[in-house]
Image (cartoon, rainbow, N blue to C red):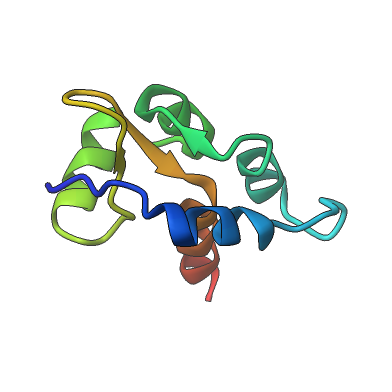
Length: 90
């Protein structure tokens, strides 16, 4: 799996697209938008998936790729995971 570094030009515009209200969102998506970036362990708990499953799905392209925050630190963007959750529902 290749972790991507955030593009400063699009990162802030992606944040600007987050919904202003959470009333119309399902509980998982609403919880996702409490943060911009999520660590694997907490994302695992939120989605009810194992950490290993998140890694495997991201590696094969079935789950969003993480953002690299350094040599070892990875986080997942809330907007990417929310889009993935939406695709599951359709």
